[in-house]
Length: 247
Image (cartoon, rainbow, N blue to C red; front, side):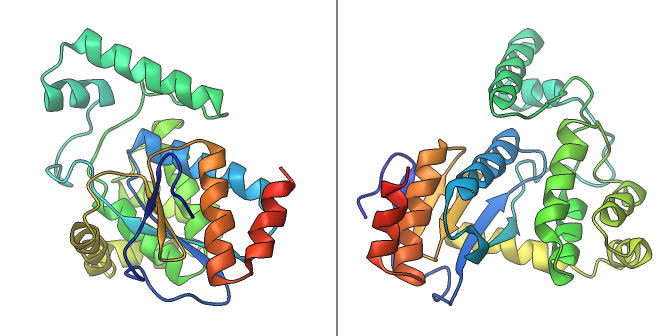
C-alpha cells in the first residue's frame, strides 16, 4: 500500500503477529479531544467496512499531561491549555472553541466550559480492568463522554466505578481494582511501549501491526488502512479491491 494522508508504513511486525482477525491498536488519552474524534471517525469507517465484524480494537494508555497527579484539583481545559503553552486565556478559549466546532461536525457534543481536567492514570487503569472483562471499547467511549460532555471528574474512583457499572461491569470489582492499583503496571507498560515505538502524539492507530494512522484523520484514511491491513492479515487483495470498489 502506498501510504496516504495520515497513513504510515510501520517497520516489520513490531506491534504483533497477524491473527485470524484484524487487530487495531489505539494509543489515546481520556482528555485528548482529537482522540475522541479519532475514535468516532474510526467507528464511522467501520460502518462502511464490509469486514467490520472481524475487527478487534485494543486501547493502550498514553498521558498528555503526565505532570498531573491524583492529588491535583481539577482545572478547566482552557486554563490548562493557557498555562501549558503560555497563551492568553482568550486565545486558549478560542482554540478550544475551534476544537468544539470540529467535534460538532462529526456528531460529538463537547462542553469544554464545564470539563474537569485531571490526572488520567486511574481512568486508564479502569480501561485495562474493562479489557480484562471484554468491555474495553464500551468503557473507553463512556470515559470520553464523561469528560467531554458530562463534565465528570474522571479521576474520582466513585465516578469511575459508576461508569464501569453503566457498561455492565461489576461496580464493586471495578472499585476494588482501582483502590488496589491492580492495573497500574499495565498502564505504565503501555506508556513505555509507546515511547519505545516512537509515538509522540495521540491518537495513534496501528492496523494489523503494520500500518499506522496518526491523528483524527478523515474516514477515507481509516478505510484505506482497514482495506489494506485486512487484505494482508486476514483476507486477500481481492477483498480490499472489492471493498474499495463498493464505496
